[in-house]
Length: 68
Ligand SMILES: [Zn+2]
View 1 (cartoon, helix red, strand yellow):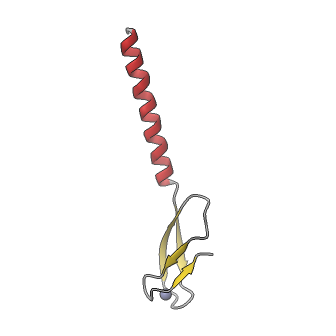
View 2: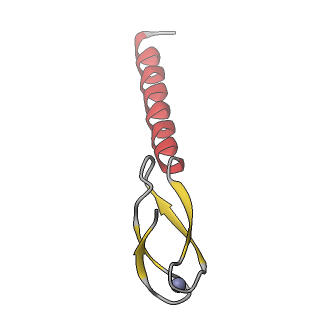
View 3: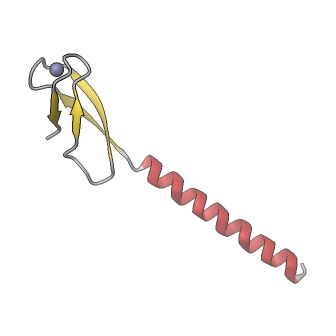
């Protein structure tokens, strides 16, 4: 393997690692099943990793609230 090929291989591996990282971040989102305090309907809320309190709007009655 010559130097150019080695550099190309290193770049490819780095690009793959970055793509994997992006994928992990994307899949790191937490899905919270939030129960509406007004009508009791359950709404699926997507929250960033480590975040459990996010604002959302109930899909049934439209009440704005925050997950607990
Ligand atoms: Zn509701």
